[in-house]
Length: 76
Image (cartoon, rainbow, N blue to C red; front, side):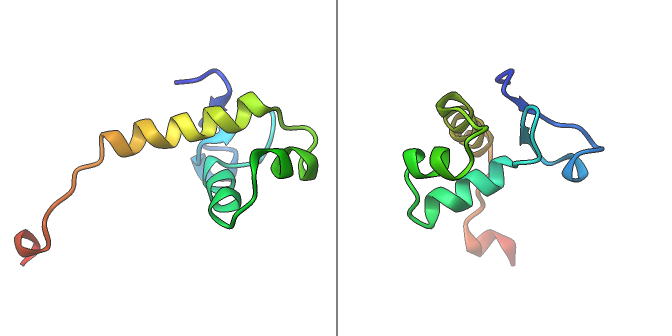
């Protein structure tokens, strides 16, 4: 795991966050999926660094890489 992403049960109920903040990986993904660019996020959240956002994207990619997907027919 990147040293920029931490998981602590005392912060946001254990969601992965950017180290030293209460900004979750999930929130970064929501901002980007709403159309915000990295530059816009950095402008809005000046305490973040480009590397923080890239670490969040990398973390999400690694989590999804290990996700198990089941075809709908197998759920019945």
